Structures are given as structure tokens and as C-alpha cells.
Amino acid sequence: MSTHTLAVLVENSPGVLARVASLFSRRAYNIDSLAVGPTENPDISRMTIVLNLDGHVLDQVMAQLYKLVNVIAISEMTDETTVKRELLLVKVNAGSKKSEISSLVEKFSATIVNEDGGFLTVQAIGEPAHIEALLAGLTPYGIKELVQSGLVALEKGSAALSDRTLSAQGISTLHEIGTQADYQN
Image 1 (cartoon, rainbow, N blue to C red):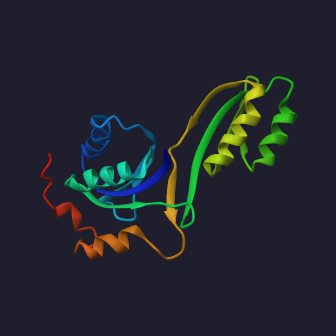
Image 2 (spheres, rainbow, N blue to C red; image 1 turned 30 degrees about the vertical axis):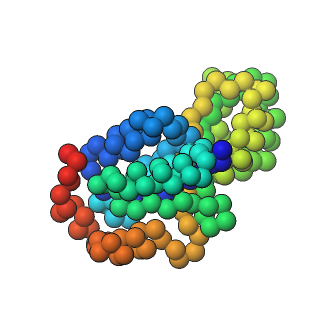
């Protein structure tokens, strides 16, 4: 199995996330990471979904996603053509090791965003391998709590998923999507 990152443009309407998630649930596929947020168009949201699947299963998943009425476009985000990042917030027991932790945090270009009651809250932004390496370095100090965002990915250069797909489908990128009927609600 291999990891695949999909960027999915969807209509920004209630229930879309639930429909997409249930598609994976019904087929017993696990989502490794899911990040959803607004785009430059308030009528469209972008999902970044990380899956661990075989190639032919990925084709089936993409075909099933396209069948959902609210899905506008899907693109696989490859390492060569995209910038990928995650956000990490981690609370570490500093104790008497504050200077060691500070050095480690600096080495990973992370920042300490809070210090309270002997605990440091560290913020890091980076590629998944960068985040994993930082966590491995912080583990011996005692991780009290952590939260990671899902992976987000954006194509390098002037390429834009919305430019390629919305105009090809005859959908205006100037906020007209909200006038379309939502056939699944």
C-alpha cells in the first residue's frame, strides 16, 4: 500500500463532509488525514485527504467521489508538484530541561508559544517527516498532550485546481455556485 494525497473541491454546503466521510466508511477505507477549509471562493471548500491505498483502489475511490453531487473536482497531489504542510501543537513537560527543549525546538524551526506551570507548548509547521522527527525528539521529555492538523497541499507555481476544473466544467469562479441546487439535501 502507498500513501496518496487528494485535493477535493466541494460545494460549501451542509452535509458534504459527512457524505464524503461516509463514502470511505462504507468501503472500510481509513482516512489517515483530513483537512477541510474555505478557498478563495466562499461557495467552495477544499478537502485534503490522505489515504493509504493500492493504486487500483485509489481509482475506484476517485470514481466514487466524483459521483457525489457536491464534488466539483479531484486531483492527486504528488510530492514533486506540491507543497505539503502540517501544523503541530504539543505540550511538553519542561521540568529542568527547558534549555534542552528550547535548543531542540530551535533546531526544527519551531516556536514555544506558551510556558505555564512547568509545561511548554510548542508550535511547528512543516512536512510530515519534519513533524514526526520533532515529536521523536520531544518524546523523551514527556509529551503531555498534542494535536496535529491534517495535511494540506497546494500545487507549486501558477497551477490551480480551481482554474483547471471550474472553467472546464463551465462553473464560474466568481461566486455563482451558491445558486446551484443541492440535490443531496
